[in-house]
Length: 483
Image (cartoon, rainbow, N blue to C red; front, side, top):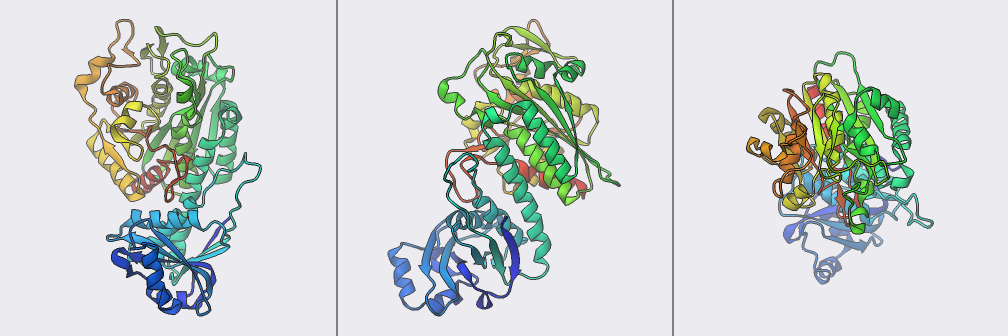
């Protein structure tokens, strides 16, 4: 566990590495001018040869020498204009580069951004994240302490807040990166129960018989072809005196073969991550409980595999969802919306002030928005604006797409209330229009994270594999609604 501490001024500290910010055109940031002055006149020429200009993301490492109490000084480029996300990204880049250093100090938090101590904490910790559970000889992470040189006493609260949030994102990443064979629904549900006990929120788990009794027809339909039975997991945070309520619903397909509408072999390679929405709500619940936020929060995670067994649902089958509406299944690989329909129906029964679902739902959204931006659709403008504001604060990019009512006819069915796929275009919108059928009049926001939930390569504080996208947005949202 890396310790994050407030330290004395940079001139009075020491360690294995010192990270100092440098602006574009090599304008020294806090602490960089001091370090450069002690290192000597050779530094400018060294940085010239390294083509280091202070561009965002650049790192230049130099030996500390005799006049400075650090073995290594790392000049970190922050670009020309600095905002909160810049600080996170630079801290993450430094964190990834310095895993073999035991004590790292920095002045990055002095750069003049509100709550910078928290931003550095989150970025650095997530930059050092690795999922090495199954590697026989993993590269060691030796960092024991990050020192925020010159941070005042008031920084302690923000540092702890950042630690809790980063820990929640790391938890989500761990759940996502776990191989599908090691997290069948019952096993994952049991893990969530443990997380709830540790963090202080309650967890109820519905087994397959209880799922049938509770009329979770979408979940049971998707699970029909799997040997491992499904679970519906409901998490609750119920603090005294809360005056607002929030419901979260996360898609939990622990492995998606596509069902009988089977995916290609290549398409299945990343499908252990198809429960990223469920992982995000679990991580968010951990942080919400640990922070003691004064808001009632219910989180629902329908967990199942989507497999091709002899009892698998077939194209043309009709499922009855918990709220009584029916869906004709024409493509078994459009399964996430089927389990979310049950989860949303259950969440809506509690009549919360706001429902937010989060899911790796459609390839269409990834095609439209790429791998760094999530799609946002909503039945209420105020709710959409609230979630957009939370995402901005958290540094997670979302883009609102229209919940176009003209497209509703695309999911009309001749034998059921709706079908689970629309036409060839606008797939992210037609999927959201189906989900809208299960929230009633409650303000609702849908986050399609098919793009940013997974990363093909590590960059700044984003790890390869599961990213934990959405955790920070949901925590920021709960904080805003708690007031």
